[in-house]
Length: 378
Image (cartoon, rainbow, N blue to C red; front, side, top):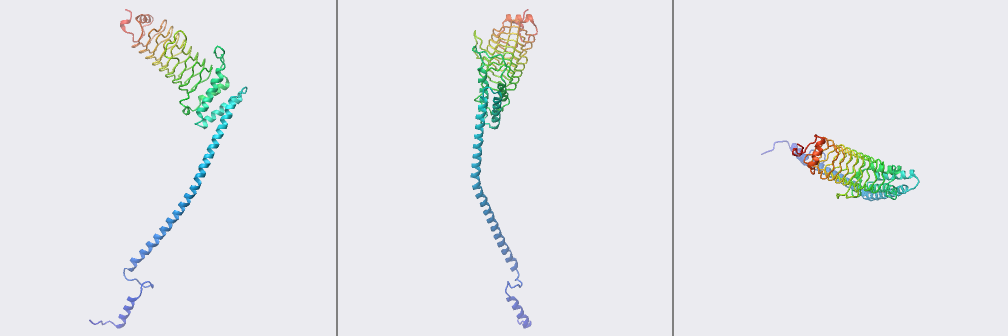
């Protein structure tokens, strides 16, 4: 076939087809869409690599700084801790020295308050401080006893009461359970011990005459031979407190002396009061569930109390006021109820009462609950 176009037009087209790409001339169809994205992706990849490298270098610098700073921080903390412990030791030594200063009440009181501050600042040192203060109270009062072992008829000294006050307001949660407060043989007449938290404390043979123990926590405390004459124990918690051994006392008195003590509202659940002298004691609203009162003397005691399952074997209740008391399932074997006022008393399933005792009770009052009808006089 013969090409009839002019010869110049053919030559011009050939020249256009032969023009190289990259000289600012148009690209052949499809070339632009293939090459430009590749160049852009390569540039972006290089940019990302540069950014990652910067981050790595920065992180390395941070780690190097920490590697140098951490040992220095640990050393500083250790040095600070050692300094603090040294300061506590010095404060403790100085406070104990003040506590033992004779003839200077102000210095001794200052030492007591210094020890209190240490107990508040340092939980590990708290039990030691509390033990020191309890020892101060015990040792500085029991030396006041005369050759016969009697405490002087006087209130506790000012510094002793200050130490007791600090013991009352301590944080008992920091106490060492293995080291309860020890006030054995202490002379604590007229001491103010309101709200004292002293579970398992030892008050054996302590003189607490006229002491105020209102709302004190004395659960499982030991009070063998303690003198609580006219002490105020209103609303105190004496659950499982031990006032004497379980064994009968025999001829010699072995129980605590609670003559005239105010135990109104106190909880004496499970308390051991063998041979205790409760002559004239106030037990109004007192809980004595399961209490052990063998050989106890409750002469003229006011016992509007809760005494179910209480052990009152051989207890002396002469002229006691038992008005409204609950003695359900109590053991009254051998108890002396001569002249006792049993008006409104609950004797449901009570044990140990003889027919003669029931007849004597019935002759004085008819308002007694729980006595078998067959036992009542016809």
